[in-house]
Amino acid sequence: MQRRKFLKNSGLTAAGMVSAPLLTSCKNETRSDANGKIIVPNKPIVVCTWDFQNASAKAWEVLNTGGNALDAVEQGVRMEEADVNNETVGKGGRPDRDGNVTLDACIMDKDGNCGAVVYLQNIAHPISVARKVMEETPHIILAGKGAEQFAYAQGFEKEDLLTESTKKQYQEWLKTSKYETPINIENHDTIGMLAIDEKGDLAGACTTSGMAYKMAGRVGDSPIIGAGLFIDNEIGGATATGVGEEVIRTVGSFLIVELMRQGKSPQEACEEGVKRIMKKNEGRKDFQIGFLAINKRGQTGAYCVHPGFSYRRYDQSGHENIESDSFIEKT
Ligand code: SD4
Image (cartoon, rainbow, N blue to C red; front, side):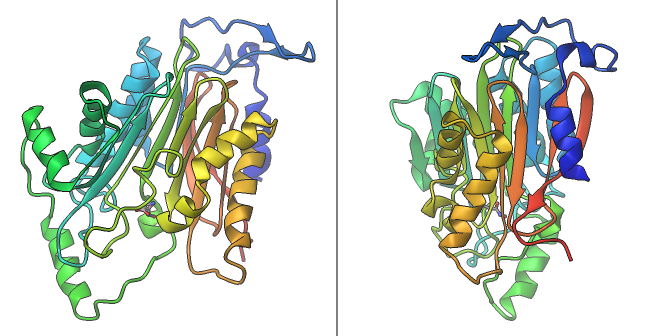
C-alpha cells in the first residue's frame, strides 16, 4: 500500500502540485530527456531517514525561502543533534562501551566537496564541524582529539553529551556488557538527509552517535563518504542507516548513486543495494539496514532489510512519512 502510494506520488507533475498547501514561488523548468520525454523536476524537496518531522520541517523552511540545499541539510539535521530525547544522534546519543559519547558526521555539496568528523567528543553539532572541515581545511576527515581541537578553534563550545537517561541506560548495560545491534532502535535512528534546492542543486548530510556500546574508537558508515552518504549533482544522492559495517562493505550510498547513473530509479537502486548486502550475509537476519535515495528529478525511494524503516519527504505537495518496503517481509 505504502509502496503504491510512493510510486503514485513520485509521478506527480508540477501542475498536480498547484493546489497543494505548501506551494512555493519556485518555477519548475521543463526539460526533456534523451528520449524526448518531458521531465518536470520535483524541487525543492528534502527527504530524511526515519520520521524526523522537526528536522525535515527545518530543512524545508530553508528550501522554501530560497535557501540552498547545503544550508538546508545542515540546519535540518542539527535539529536532531540538539534533541536530547533522540538517543542515537548528537547530544544525548548513547555512549560507547567505555561510557564515552563519540559522534560521526559528514556533509557533501553539489560540487563534490565534502567534510567529515569521526570519533568526535564533547561537541553537540558534529555536522557543523564537518562543514567547517569541508570549507576551512584542505582535508576531508578529522578524527578524535584533532577534530575536537579544530572545533574549539572554530568557536564550538565544549558540552557534556551524556544525559541522565543515557548514563542510567549505560549503567544498566554494564551489568551484561553485551554488544547487540537492535533492529529499528526507537524507530528513529541515525539521520541522513538529502535535498534539492530551487536551483536544482543537491546536498546531503548524515550524523549519528553510532552503534550504542560499540568498541572505543569504532567508526561506522555514517561519516564515510560513499558509505553513509553520497551526492552526485548530475545523478542524485543516497544515504544509509543501520549497521554501518555492512554498509561500508558495499560502499552502499555510492553504489546506489552509480546504479541510478545506470538508469535505475531510486527505488530500484535502493533495493539492489540491500540485495547486495544480503547476498554477502546469506541466512543472517540479525541486522537492519535502510537506504534512502533521490534522483536529480526529485524522485525518491527507500528499501531496508527488516520492516519498520521509513523516511519523511517534504516537497511542494506537502509532507508525509513513507514506509519503506523491506527485504524480509512483514509478518
Ligand atoms: C553506524 N549507521 O554507526 C550508524 C548507526 C545507525 O542504526 O544507523 N544505527 O553504524
